[in-house]
Image (cartoon, rainbow, N blue to C red):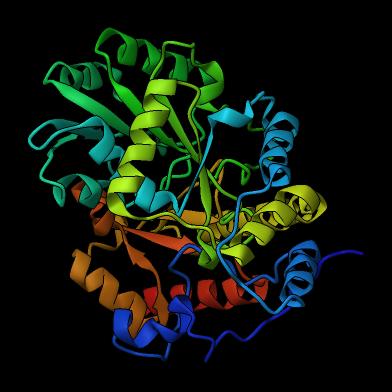
Length: 389
């Protein structure tokens, strides 16, 4: 049956960070939340059914990872990403953010350098700085409304003695899907300077038509030190269930990551997370295909609306993710004024760009993972209030 992505599902009073956290984050409940990266769509029926079946058993004790869970991962990435993964490469983890922190512990010592590429998802910074490592920034370059890696500067960063690079692929918040050529160039630098790369590919399934996401790990050789984070959490809207996985072909890097998780005492064997994870990859493909059609139509609608009705804002049109990167520098507002404008005037809660790095001053991140009617109302509010500036 077709999926109804236009349905409005009320999430208030479910302890939702996105909805029930508005007062804490924005200072008011009186706004439409288009911020934290989860969607307002019902999950695929295959996930709901699997959870209901598991709940029929009244005991939720310590749980193993079944072989069928590993096989669901292997089959999904072979089918969707042409990557042949071996079961021994898979290490389950309590989430992508804990994996960032674990990788910093596993591959660096205090004072050693870790490269990040801002503007980028903010835990990339805290995973480095809160662990007393040296943060080395390799900012992306914005060229004609599209972001690119600065490879010349990256090489300079690597020469500073960096041990680890945290890659966001596809990139959050700018929406880039890195080409195989860009990734090959990145691998070449990592080889020459013995860099370990943690590639956060959690948005890998959320790519738009005409774009192909390449898993860095698929391009890597047997001697490359690549750790890839994957999860169905963003793809199928189950981030609250937490479980993710790492794909680590190298035995040495795999051992180091396992030891880091043991050190952090962060093992995760939640029986419901395991059930949802397997069900998503085993039965959610049709739902995902229809979701991407819907999201792409919304993305294109926003692009056209902004171009014709709000020309003082520029959309960095994403190649992946349900997150839009809005260049609001044309409004001439400071970051504080910009946040206040969207909250107080437009009644919209979005992520200020500045939290993704100083390079993102004047930007806002907008989540379109909701019914299109919500986005239409948001755009009309922005248009009306910009006209009254």
